[in-house]
Image (cartoon, one colour):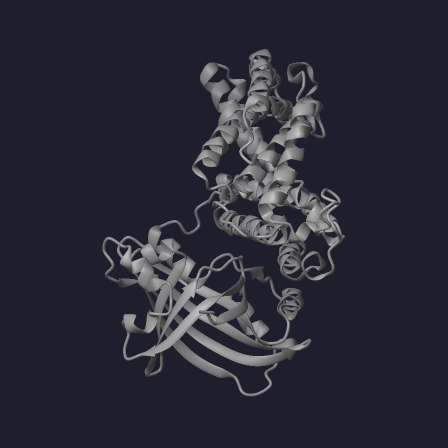
Length: 525
């Protein structure tokens, strides 16, 4: 059975922005505007079996009619191209007879307690109109309302662009044009995901990267799209958290998402070789987010290095002033991160990345044969993802083996390059893990990632030492260094010295971890 599909783009904004958008010249309707009040109730088992299976089941009341809808999980943030099944029902309760052609019966059959009950509801005033843009007819919906859960409510403002006829490219070009007028952001969560997070108390909390699930028969191009959108989703979730509460862990996870995305762009270079936009986006991401690193370095120094130093030397008076000065600098650095995240340049870049992942030449244009396997003459984009993974992971491992020789005798910059390569390999191992499901390979994967993590940990500690010098050096980068009291400067020197005390031990441990990684069997062979 082929499920009906919907293709729509969800964008987040404020309530006042919706009013301004309704007057935008690009959003003037072909006909009359439709206005409705929609109440949607979402159902699941007590254990959340449907949600765990990537499904939502809702009953929506529209006037005197009720419609039951089953949706599969979205594959990308903001962009919803997913299976959807709808059927009229007599009232505000699920009718399981109407879901026989969906995955719901199979999920409920395997549930310990298959009974369905309401989990949360959305109350939305929707104004919708159909517009023409480019070569497409697009339904534009202005949604304003709230989510109601047992754990509290939350406001809801969304702009939805649903493709009725035409090309998905037009959804993005319209969104980008509108974003020049109001501060639109790519949707981080669907209404259902937002409702579940609010109910569970996880909304506005930092989140780690979720495991990537690749189809066993996925091509390299398909794998890249899934992986890159997973990175973008990780980014948007933590961006929202930091914007609302300056959470330090959210900033850390935002930077992890950015590194993962840039690593994906590097690992999949053979797939993207014919599309110059890939390098442009990678460079833009690095340029715009460069200041994020200073903020994160200050977070780590204050939370770890300086905290340990103050515990080690509780009577050192200068450490209190050192902490206050660095906290003030950290606040300024956070202000800079917020300024970037609130800028049109940043919001536009995120939309550009999403648009390129969905409609870029790397995906839609002609593909060149993969130079890595000339005898096959198969474009890299069309290679089986598992074959492609073996190629790129082999290359990454060879680079680490070569660059990590005599690690304990290398300069800091050389070790930093090994650390970057180790991160890329670690992300690659995580990206492709779902392609290696055999029991023996899962065991090899666990051992390989463990050895790689040990190397990363030791190199990370060495990098933290180097970063501590940078952080402390920033203290003297003031108009008049004499403004820094002598006892504060002395405390900074003590902190720097104590921080380096175990440097030789870390170098030896890093070299041993590199040897262990070289000896472990790669899981992809």
